[in-house]
Length: 139
Image (cartoon, rainbow, N blue to C red; front, side, top):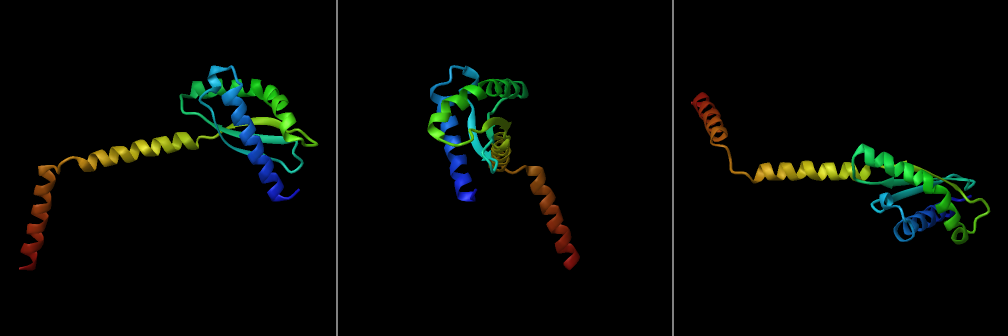
């Protein structure tokens, strides 16, 4: 099967799974889940669904268990919309990209806050002394 066909299947599964989790899922653990991508194998028998959630390791494990439990329900709900010869098994894989992005934002904000603080007078004295020694050496 061609790459375009597989990419269309990936996008379709991603959209359907995200929609089902948002609109039809009764499990409150799945309300904060973001589907970040899908990777279907060439014969469409297996789909790795990448998800992300911001939370502790325990919360991530709970969501993983909930998604694994809901895989059969999701598969049966998306079957009419896919119309494929092989309906893929859904395998959920945690994607830490959102957590990494949040952490990077926090670090950048801390650096920005440091830069916004007024200069330390001790640092100014050190810079002045270094400048004096350079000037004295040139004379």
